[in-house]
Image (cartoon, rainbow, N blue to C red; front, side, top):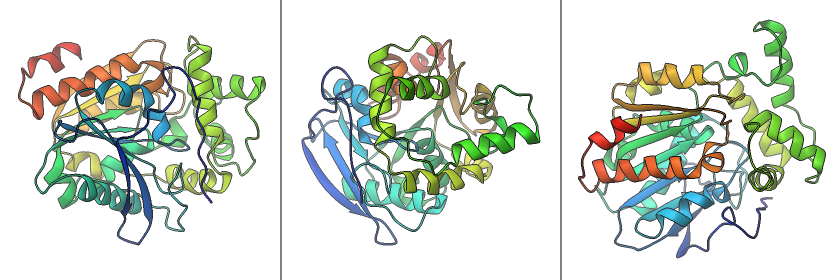
Length: 311
């Protein structure tokens, strides 16, 4: 059973899509897809992270849809997409390919942006034919390709087996998150956001994360704990911008630096001081600006210097 939740007012309230559709993945999994903005505008595809939904991209959709065709979808088991027994990185890649095939014309180029597990989705799809046909350039936000549990800083302990073991038990917990209470907001903010995050940002994240069914949260946590997509990074040949928060406890900047070093065509690395894991919500203007720069440079043909100057 799937369910959705989000704030209903303010900049993080999800806009109403111009249309919705269902993309069917290779194994028959059905994916909720939203299309926002003018039908003839340059396309942007948004892939959200673990325990999130299309609502996570509300700020980017609201801004970009004025002059872009914005395509956002719920990962399987998240938001309005039903859960599936197949929880693998191959399934994530299949799903992204299905969304691209369902929303883009043959050979049509788009910017693909992925946050956290959405970025891992992009890495998993890097060698896939539909992805190569449609991705003009990529934005990777707050993500990594391997050693996620070992590098996480959720527990304030020295790196090593004890910290890794405890972190794995916390992130892989089957416990329900329950209602969004003041304590729940504090815990979520500590684990996923920078200390300076405004209350309305924390509320937006909490509503989204707490709506994710615990069985889905647990199933995908096991995939992330065993993640090894280093090979996918090396196959991601499209121009790629990497964005990370310096205070990200889930995917610390060590991951962003490793990605920038391994990507065949990294065109920018931005580390945001004081920002945590939820970059599209914590730094919406910066993330949206990077997407606009990529569209201008690699889809509509503006000056490529803009991206490197902002890195």
